[in-house]
Image 1: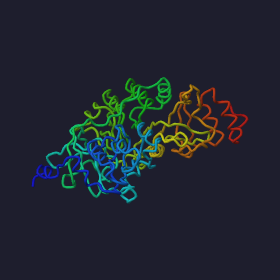
Image 2: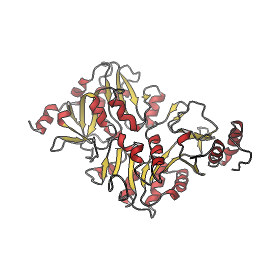
Image 3: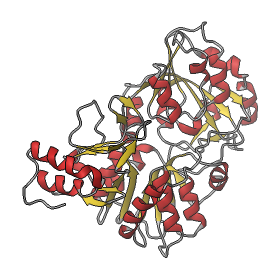
Image 4: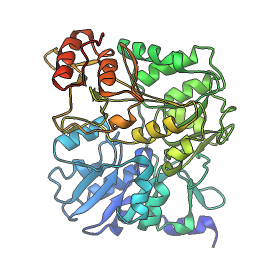
Length: 445
């Protein structure tokens, strides 16, 4: 039997394929652009007929039918490794639940049996002449998911680019139970235009950057602002090693800033684990030998990152306290995001020779009534999730400056942190620091 004959033998409609799902099953959609839109719709059509089926996914950019068709969770429970804006709303409404994790460990949850998978449904690129389907934009922990699954259903989509990988970048037709053909557009993640505050924060970080560094950028307005500064600068021969590749990197490639020539690992190759952005970015990655996908267990492993000398990691956070604890995933108990890879890269960048990690945020936020509130708190007491402990807090950045907290005592930390707070909030923070016995009378801000 040829590979094409085997493909045809396993070809099903989406409604036929999802008949593999039974009551009580765990169904995994993997993450980001692997979202199987036709299969999700077909599974959603079984709402009311199925009971106690759990779905796992991360970063919903399209409304999942299993959620929309079953708002009371009679058939489906939606579980999220990481949250988009849409996912936050689902969680707030009690229609989804967050699953805490560190990205570098995510694959191990499947390997060790902590995250069972009865049916894996993932979107892949079309089959090649050797019977292989590229995972495309999602390497992540996709192989671990498929290895753990009792059944594997592929949603084959010509919009998914073929992306070369270091490992775990494809699946063979012989390992597949069903194939469903799709032509729906892939999930995208539009870039956010930088605000004035984003630009100020980026300007404080920029002097720390230099030729030949390897760069990890998060997503959002501030990384986009920094990307624009880099693209317009004289910096050269930068490298890419990142958990998530976004359009900010595409701009740097097009500007000739990223060459990967100076990297200590995978010299000449940019490395990512998942990708979300524009169709232009996806087209750029298709059959691009300059870029490799890799498992999250490798990309986010601090032991990998430490080998990339001159590694610079730049991510965003939500708030911090005067002790240097950093929250990047909740406001009180309201889930905003997830730990993701922040702690992985904070740890790895410190271990790398000449490495630096930055966590950035605006000094204040504005509520619905127009009132300003400090994002620097005396202490966390409202259930905020601590993403980065004070023992690992890196360079902290607001629009008022940079505070390097490494090696500082509690009073030194309080002084440095208050120094990057909004001027209108500093007096109250000083009083709080005094009450918490982390302030010296000789301190000057």
